[in-house]
Length: 137
Image (cartoon, rainbow, N blue to C red):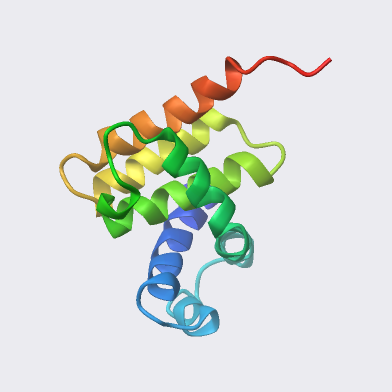
């Protein structure tokens, strides 16, 4: 597994433990102490960033939902969306398509049978909406 892919998966596990399980970031990361430093550094960047911008990210997710309530999204799906949107919006030099693909792969592994399609649909809808926004002059 490539280092960024591994970092995203670790970030998901840590973010889930911190956001929902009440673990501290250092405690959650201690489970991955034998991973390469570059992997842990990128994971930490994703977790800290998603937590820092969680309110803004949640508003973006809510704005993309059609006939669905934010509170009805499963916890793993929310965490995957939050991490992916942080990376898309706040990390330079990362291809959006790669982030979407990897979010879908994490959803297949840790979500429900419908999670991967849901994650793909929400992220694609958000990105499509941004492409259709008029440019400022």
